[in-house]
Image (cartoon, rainbow over all chains, first blue to last red; front, side, top):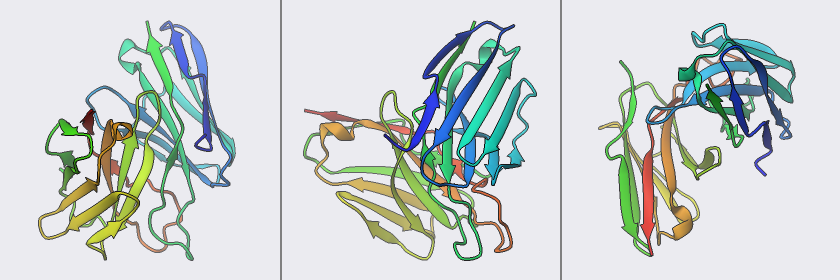
Amino acid sequence: ETGVTQTPRHLVMGMTNKKSLKCEQHLGHNAMYWYKQSAKKPLELMFVYSLEERVENNSVPSRFSPECPNSSHLFLHLHTLQPEDSALYLCASSQRPGPLAPGANVLTFGAGSRLTVL
Amino acid sequence: GESVGLHLPTLSVQEGDNSIINCAYSNSASDYFIWYKQESGKGPQFIIDIRSNMDKRQGQRVTVLLNKTVKHLSLQIAATQPGDSAVYFCAENMTPSPLYTGANSKLTFGKGITLSVRP
């Protein structure tokens, strides 16, 4: 148990479906992230939320829509995806840097949601 | 452009031997480095980190070495065990200005290297 829980662990969807990935962290962190992990490619940062405010959107197509209703929950809404969107989607959380704790902080990852788009 | 890379895609070691996984980075402004381990079916797990004001840091059976002169990072695993078989990622981060109150959006990951431990 890493403290970051992702559901579902596996998802198969057609290109016209609408689905959502869910992430929940139990670590008291105040920053949450979505990463995409494809075969033979580095982890790609998609979105960053800090105190429920989106602070980064790395040129992700609009068919991916994140939502962060509170500091413990993060969603990734999916619609009209393409087969090349098939990948492992990883959620992570961390403490955000602040005046008393400058610099980077360790990310804690969930186990990921394996998405297959047919 | 800036990148973080690993020299070899796979590494095979005998159980009990020491393992050394190497990583090159190109952003001289990076000041924080992390090693992650990802086992099959799991997300990346933190192993050890090091800040740029250090050149060596030790954990339990693991040591990270940082050579800023040649922008090189390595992870040493002592007495490698079958449970060490996984994909290992190095990551670098450039700390934003002290006034930045966002999150770790500058963390850049390498592609990963597979460590295979032979019994």
